[in-house]
Image (cartoon, rainbow, N blue to C red; front, side):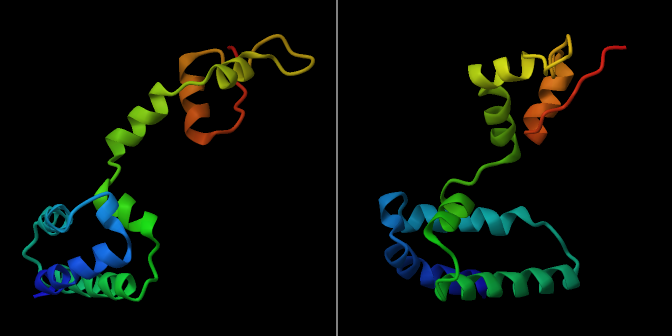
Length: 133
């Protein structure tokens, strides 16, 4: 029942959020169908909660409480954790690498001279001091 409601509103959503520049109604329907298929459960309480959350989300979308980029990142081109990790590990800028290797005033070693320190600093985006033992 909820999926039918969502599918009926797809043309309106695509038109009003100007999603026709990045996707079609049929592609958006298939993406939403995949979101419905992700959940495999027989527990009626879980199903009730998911239906409630789905109805709340479609109400928010129809009430323009979502912005265009929210819909694009969530349904048109969703980023999985694998893609996020790949983007974080492959994009090492020269500036950041040099910044993390330069020693602070009055010390001899770099902030993060080993690979483990680099991974932690990229994850937290903070300066982590790596002590040599």
